[in-house]
Length: 87
View 1 (cartoon, rainbow, N blue to C red):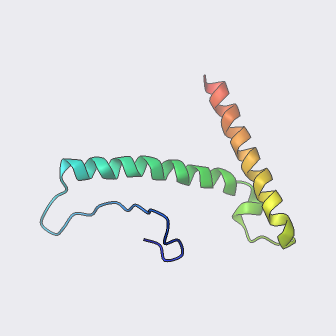
View 2: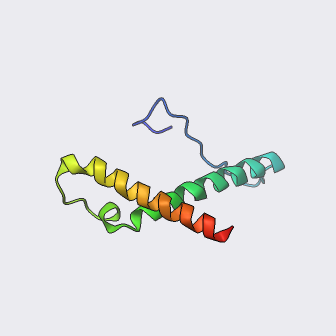
């Protein structure tokens, strides 16, 4: 659990104990968690492609929220465009 967000439910991958292996259910849980985690990491990567979000923010603090909204909107628009072109 993250101390900064005590009301949030956090999940971590299960690790095997020394000399034992994970059960099939534990492996399935880890695999499901991994599928969620990779989607989140890819979303973060799409946002960080825009250097203003990936580097140190050097603009006025009061503009950060609107810039974040714009960058996330552009990343979502690009994702939507890619999914429509793939179909």
